Every structure is written in C-alpha cells, then in structure tokens.
Image (cartoon, rainbow, N blue to C red):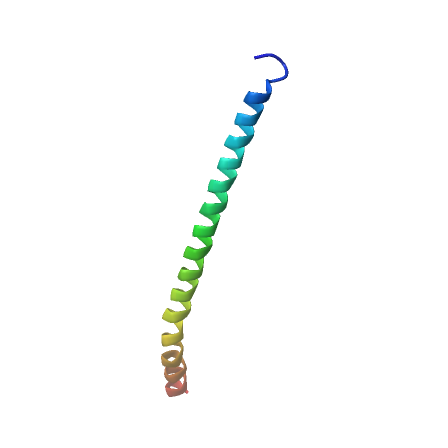
Length: 61
C-alpha cells in the first residue's frame, strides 16, 4: 500500500466506517429506550411512596 490508498480500499474503509456509525446509532437508540423505561419505573416507584411520606409527616406534626 502506497501513500495514497487505491479507490477500492478507500471505498471499503468508508463502508466499514458507515457500518460502525450505523451500529453506534442503533446502540444509542436502544440505550435511549432503556433509559426511558428506567425513568418510567423510577417515577412509578416513587409516586406510590410520596403519599405515605406526606401522611407520616402530617402524623408527626
């Protein structure tokens, strides 16, 4: 391989880079879905405990 790669090699490298970018975007989309699910579960878990905390606070006063 010389200083300037031949067109075929450049094309192959671009295709590999594009494939890696596609895989990275897919992974980020999956991560975003998982993060949303985790946030929803967190909100659901904490929404049930808030009334109990408020009730306990009123009883303590």
